Image (cartoon, rainbow, N blue to C red; front, side, top):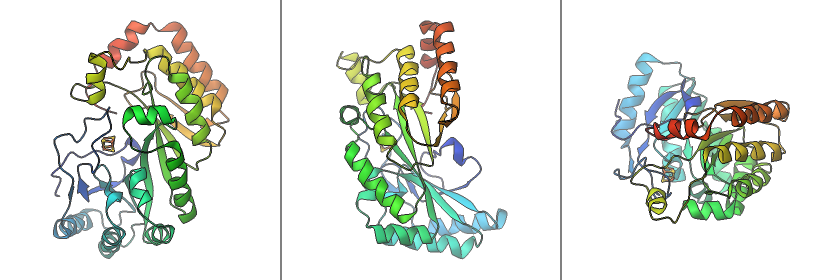
Length: 293
Ligand code: SF4
């Protein structure tokens, strides 16, 4: 298999077969991210992609779901995505789903009819690192789009029938701003049809712009209890039926919930942690984290 770049997939794609379609990120401007800083964006040549498909076919000929790696393979043109999706089907006849990361920018340059065609070819299950639905936080993080853009592009996915998962990141708005971020983000996310919502929490890594801003006193990180309170507010304000997974390692206390059914239980659970664990213990946990997750 040709894995030349940093290989990164969400935890919920653990049982998908992975293949490198692209490596690196086309954007590299999110201020909290150090994932692909030293890597240029690259599309895997078709020859390489086909060799990998042939290898997968040898070991897992009946693979049903594959995950295309790279920060945003969905940035490829419609024609390129189409060619690769059809090629996957040549090799893996049972493959029903080709999932991948996508940015709001990547959806923006595609028409609904193109999205519908891609869906029909098996492209489905887009993980979108939205991070927030609050315009001030999105601007601070350097995401390059607004809450209105998220809504507009996700509506196109809804129309095309493409399933997607969005991400919310606690702590990203900085100290004192978690409540605003949670309320505004819940308002936006309640208008989306995300199959589930994945929650991370900001960890400042050396080398990122946000880390430098923190060193210079231009960004004050939220403390850990403020983040848990932010998560509570986010959950309390979400007005959709969805699954929420706040169980990656960046969350001090992992929780999952099916909303709205488990809303009260998970809010109480978070309250118990805030009441019984010290801020120092939580901060020590974050200091030990080695990567985004
Ligand atoms: S968060 Fe995603 S889109 Fe932003 S720079 Fe990192 S990899 Fe690229």
